[in-house]
Image 1 (cartoon, chains in turn yellow, green):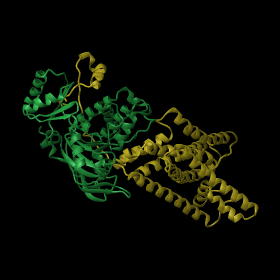
Image 2: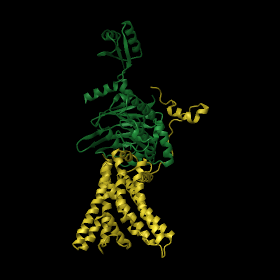
Image 3: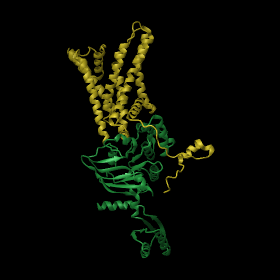
Image 4: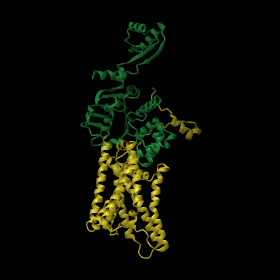
Length: 310
Length: 310
């Protein structure tokens, strides 16, 4: 073997010479250069992964096909805001209350969650990219945090952007009476709760299978099942005039659960038929929300700790 | 060779390192050290090579024993180790829908490089491993050889002090294998990055390693410099069309150590005159000389002897 320390111009150098140094006819191989610049810590890696994942959720940096679904759904989320502004401008009435926005659009949010959470976790499992992350200065907990927060941010954007457009529209249209700033801010705070709760459930369910289709199916099944059970129970209980029990049955649906929490926290009007359980309903909703988030995050952490050591 | 002084710095050391899984003991009281340069880690499939790398990266906890990598302990300083070390896994680990450039930039950021530095390093590294225009295309369309190069690039992109390459020649054709081995040699010499490379093929490592560690069933069989492996068995293989016996007798008469393996004669090389003696003997006997080459598969012989004696 020839002495490998002698620097021979490789094909790369020739190519470069063709593009850059051709006029002088000199081939330069600058050889391997060491990196002695900055090396940032875990926080940097965490934010890089979060940002990369967030971009990926909206299909940015991916194929054109990957952009269709998220942008279509984001567009649909904007519709009520646009219509509402038009209604305000033309007949001077508010169409969609801020507090009802997310609950009204729950199907769109659920489809977005189901379609996009598997993208966040399934390819890393399926194509075994995970070991590359875990052999870098990132822990499995960092990975979970990055994936959860990117999904939560995406959902927050999905709810918050139309709300903000609606609010700006309201200010521009300048309806009689003061603007509904308090309602807007309450809805924005509730959007954070929606985002964190839905992201935890979606990512946790999706992380259990490396198959994207299965992930989509399991998240959408969760939404349909909880909504259907809740709706059927409410219907049955109302028809047998047990209104008190029916009010509790609403809480089985994740969207009405957060709505009930919103009613308790910000005193908004309930967006279901018949309202939520008085007194205990609010605190119980809060506890359930926290419990679901806790269970999902714990499941994720355990799941990735196991993946790290296999 | 002057390598002894360079190798004086220990890059990794294990002391009684043991890893037991519920059903199998992957590593059994392994005590080895490796210095700078290229170290080959040889063993059959399931000998414990990958487990050793995972223990050294701090991805697995040892059952017993200790290890140090670059003077750091995987048990307590795994983050510092992973910042300074690169890892190329044995298995596929590339997402198909992103380009090699995007993927390598992302992985550089995950190792703590700021965004602009990550871009520069990714471009440099991909050029060094031999990926040019194709690096902008999605990885899904790459050949096995190109994938292996991307895997290598992501391990080198943050300019580590040490890289673990797990079966880098897996699945490559003979040409691809040669290219990869030459690249590994360059990494160890020109780039000045220490390399630990695993393989189940001993003949391959002979060409690139300074030091070879042979493990089998999780136990150390042998650890020595490549010189020691071949010194003891300096020999020349002679192939003639016919007349092996007369040639062997003539060489023996001239005081050479000769062994006959079918059509091949193996002659121990005591001094450079041995080659002359072989040439003269072939000419005098008027034989048809097909091949005269230095013993190539000697490490395998050593391995075979040691396995049979264990």
